[in-house]
Length: 101
Image 1 (cartoon, helix red, strand yellow):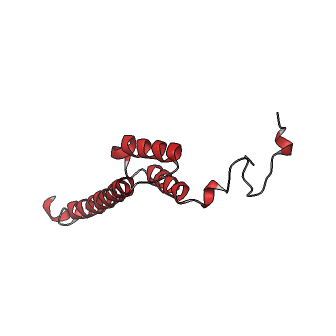
Image 2: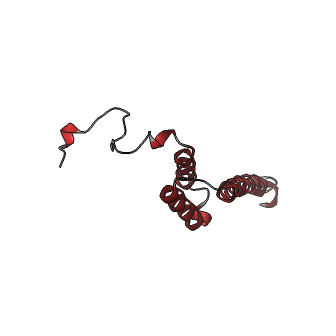
């Protein structure tokens, strides 16, 4: 068992038996993109789908075109919902002051 003091603190992979650094792969960048989308809170409604895609990509270490398309669609829908929410909240306050007489 390695002691924590013996672990590398640089960018080298922790497991020397793995070829290449997974952080340099497309699938790893894709999972990072999913993590950022989940962390933003904009796509809570699609959390189960995104978690499933993330788990599959991490397990298989490859990304299918369908998975890319699904995440792009979820991102677009999340941005659309955000834009609609900001427009509807600004419309609600426009003209509201004149009706309180």
